[in-house]
Image (cartoon, rainbow, N blue to C red; front, top):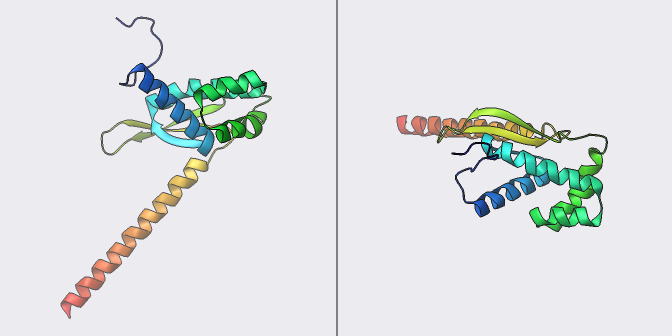
Length: 153
């Protein structure tokens, strides 16, 4: 029985789960907002919050602790120099999980996982992608009409 066992297994071994959460944390730091499944976002939230708290300390030991999780020095530099100062007066709650519905292929619950204060980055990406899809659909419709017209002649 799993009574009082915290954390989700996410269908992975411990090492795979650790790597997945580290990759999600790196992606959020890099892009400020990502789309992932809701359980992954909720688990990664704890990792990212802890990394930002270490970054707010700003000392060498904290930087080394963060480097254990995020292996990319450029991302760690960005976290310490750009992201952490923004949350200097905030006592936690640096991330947000916004549920966006179900994934089309397998019906998995999806969410936008973003840093507070960087709102709209993912929404802008989603809107741009939607506009591209609509433009592509119009172009395909137009080419289909042209084929029909040429076939009729």
